[in-house]
Length: 110
Image 1 (tube, rainbow, N blue to C red):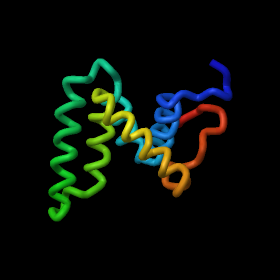
Image 2: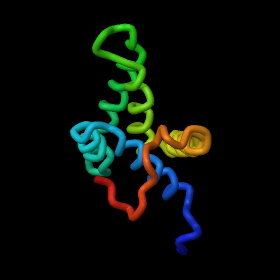
Image 3: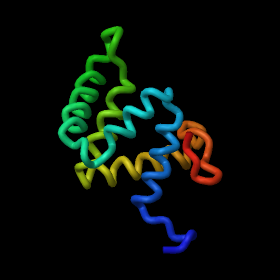
């Protein structure tokens, strides 16, 4: 694969890393840990709980930010959801590039 040819999965991963880079360091490390393939048994319940918490946004501890985070975690294991989040991140990058944070210059995250 050449540098010019970026696959859909590579583009999604790049955009997702930029978005995770905007999170507080502790939360970002937690999300990266959850995204590891070995943590499937923790990732699925965490994603479902985050989605449920997003629907409880009227309560002080919960918020709408939990909904997309839960969807992104579930998308790691559900192919059609992975494609949908990839398209959503591509749209965000086109329409609101600052939402994803600064572009990675040389691949260094933190």
